[in-house]
Image: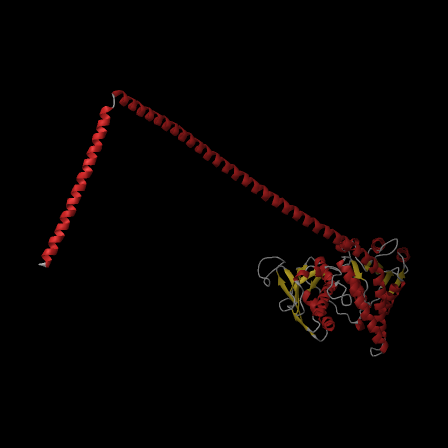
Length: 508
């Protein structure tokens, strides 16, 4: 029963709500009808004139709106035209900016190139100027060395020559012989220094012939071992090097090797190993493996010493440059090595680093000529002769040395201090002169001029020039041949005796 009452109540509430909505809708409808009736009454009260004015006003406003719209359209079109013009101007400006930027970049590149070229030209000018100064310095040093060498080597020749003659007359066990041996060794060191000066100044004359590098290295081995001392092991790697001959002066090549050996010895104060290897190889800078084939002979001198800083690799060949200190080096050794290599048409390079030892590579052009076997000097069995030798030298001591060398060997020795005295002896006819042994640098008439005059008087006369320094005239005369001989001062008595015999035997 309760449920029936609750359900009846709910239905009653719903009926009330529905009745309220219906009444609200009717009230709204009535208000709308009343509003529309009022508006209709207002419209009915308007006259035709008022409606026409309203229409014209509306039409005017519409025309004004069309005019305004047209103006806006024209302004819009003008704005679009301006935008197009601005875009075109922007593109033109961008093109001009790009062109100008490209032109500026090209100008900058050209300017940088000109600056670089100017810098290179300035560096080249400085390099050439340094080379000129170096060449002038070398020329002055060469002239100084050549001027001193003549008198200096004459003195060395006299000292060393008479010391050797005296040694040959004394008992080897005599204390005097020991003193004379010390004099001879000191003279040899002085001769080496003189030759170094002449070599790097290119005033050292050369006797060019086919030379076997193997023979040169083997012949120098004994002297090198004595020079290096017991703490340094000398190894000669000459396997496969037979037949590697160069056209050069064996004495200068020995000087080159001796300087490299002394340089290596000083780089190994606590001992080490020095290896001299002779092999065939390519020219400097040539492609291909370093140890295969090639058209040059390579003398490779390697030590296990302290090494050389790479920054000094070029400077070490400069004359008088040394890292040993004034008490241990003159700075001429490696300068001599380079000049001797250059005079023989070759070159020298270095490979080294601190603590890793040093390797010098001397490249020399090969020759197809067969090297002559070098005659071993043995003072006790010097060759003898009965020919007449005319000695011409303005130094009395030199003439005496030559006379005391050749006369005991059976030669008839004539002496002259000047060219006119020598020509008088040649014209006298009291003794047929077989060999003219003359100094080149003499007052008034030099040795080459004397040789030319003497050859006209005695066509079969053999001539040997003696000099301590070279000259272009001597080099040209030796190139022409014609039997002209040459011996470099200072010379040992044994070397002179052997050379004189060889020249006379060639005449026969």
